[in-house]
Image 1 (cartoon, rainbow, N blue to C red):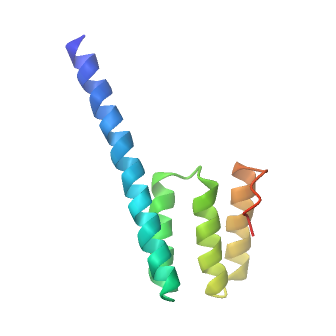
Image 2 (image 1 turned 45 degrees about the vertical axis):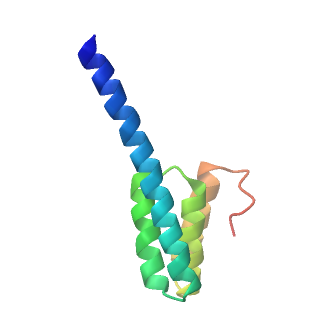
Length: 93
C-alpha cells in the first residue's frame, strides 16, 4: 500500500511540474512573439505542444506564429488541428 501511495504522489508531482512547464513555455513563446522573434516563439510553442498535444490554445499559438512567418499552409494545419480538438474553439483563426 505504501508503494502505491508513493507512486500516486510522484504522478501528482509530475502533473503539476508538467503544467508549470507548459505555462513557462507559453510565457516565453508569447514574449518572443511580441519581440518579433518568431522562430524562437515557434520553438517554445512546439515544446509546449510536445507536453500537451490536446490543448487547442497551443495549436492556435503555433498557427499564429507560422502565419507571421508566412508559412500559411502550416498555419492552416495548426488552426484545423485546434478545431479538431475543440470544434467550438472560436479563437481558432
